Structure formats: C-alpha cells, structure tokens
Length: 327
Image 1: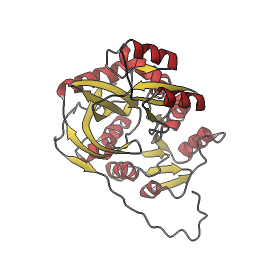
Image 2: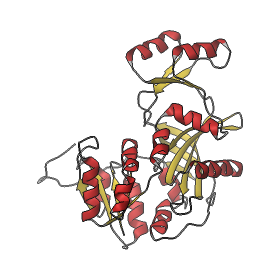
Image 3: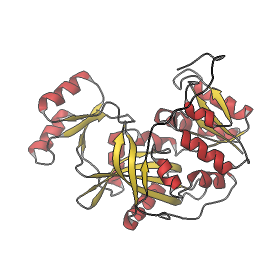
C-alpha cells in the first residue's frame, strides 16, 4: 500500500507518521518542486516535480501514481487541493484514492465570502464580511461593525496579505491597490483549532482534536494546549458530515464571550496536526484503515487535556555535492 504525499515541503512530521503507521505494509513517496524540501527525505522515495502551476502538472502526478502503484494521494498545500479534487475521477480510474473533499466544497473553503455564507446556512456563528467599502460603511453607520477590521483577499491562504485596518484612509488605500479584497470583522476572542477526520467510507466524523492556540507564526500554530468541549464536538461533527467533507480537515474557531465562532475550514492536514497525533489522535491510521476497506470507530475527544505542543527549529544536513540544487 503506497501513499503519495504531494508538496511535502517542511512537513516532516506528517511524512514520519505515515511511515510509522504503514510499518512496512507499503511505501511513503513524497514530491516537491525543490530537492531542498527536508520532508521528502523522511519518505521512502522522493519524486522531483515541476511547480503546480506548470502545464500538465496533474498529469505528471497521475503518471507517478501509475509507476509507483500508489493507493492514495493527498497534498499538504492549499493551491493544489482544488486541482486534485477537480481530477478526482482520473485518479479513481487508475485505482488511486484522492484524499480530498468534493471539488465544490474545496472551492468554497478557499473563498472566504462563500465560506461565511456556508457557516450561516448551517446555523454557525462567524465574523461579518463585506465585499465593498460602501456596504461596510453602511454597516458602520448602522452600528453593526466598527474598526479595527481585517482586509484580506477573498481567496487566499497561509495568512498572506492580511492587514489589520483602523481607518477609512487605510481601507481606501488597500482597495485602490489590490483587487478582489474583502472586509472581515475583527474577532476579539481566543483562537482555537480543531483537527478533524471524516471517514472516507462512512462519511461519519470519527475524530476531533481541539487545541487552544497560544502563539501563531506565519499563519500556523506555534504553541498550543489540548482542550475539550463536548458541545462543540457535536456541532463540528454535525457540520462536517452534513457538508460532505472527507478525510483530514482543519477548522479555525474563536471563543468570543463564551460563544463559538467559526472562521475557516482547510480541507487538509493543519500545520498544528502533530499536536493531535502525539496526543493519540491518529489520522494516518484512520486513513490506512479506510484504504483497507474498513470504517473507523468514533473516537471523538479521546485524548488528554492540558498537553502542550511547542514547535522549535531543527535542521537537516545532507551531502548533495553531486546534485544540482533546486530551491
């Protein structure tokens, strides 16, 4: 049972976890467009590929799947997820399971305006959003929102190009400089993250790990502590099942005055997933079970509270004197 991890980059832990859980039953093969991506050297084999925006990229991935007898494929970066979901049937036609939610759902996740509407449709609280300065000003006049606010791209990831704005002048300047921006309410509360697994066979939510974010860095959780909220677990499980998510997903939330507000859904492993795994929430094992044709038992909340994750810097040293270095 060979598993292909696309765009492995620096996500060494995820590659290590799959190697451990396969335990000799198959290989972990990793790709990246750079041979200086440390995570690929944690895999059994590495396949150097083009950048994802190069013509024919997914066809190259499909060829890797054929040659390496791949059973399942997933990506660790946002821009690649829609590409995989759009070609889902092509993967299935060659016997490969793409570990991804349906295409329309993935596209919704990466459009923050559509995502806010979706949260509202499912009865979930979320921050107010506006796509024009005029609509925002009308809301200010009505007392519905006030500065500071966030201005960000409607479609974006990794917290890129997000600006906290505190005045009309700043707001007008950003909208004059960039297209496809949105205004989002600044949510004054404690940020949390939920690592969630939705069974690929049954569609049932089988695992949820909730963590309080203590410190963030470049859009990823740097320090966090495990917590539980049984009522929230029920809300999350109902939402992801009804929406139709599959596999590993990552949800960002805020606790504002004792009420839960949903911020984003990332249909992939979150950057803070190692915290969940080390607390016993074993999503690689869940996926492997599904690939063997087995559904997973529901283990939501089966971990200890008060366990802290602290990321720290590490280095990898390799002798590459005979190789061309591709950054």
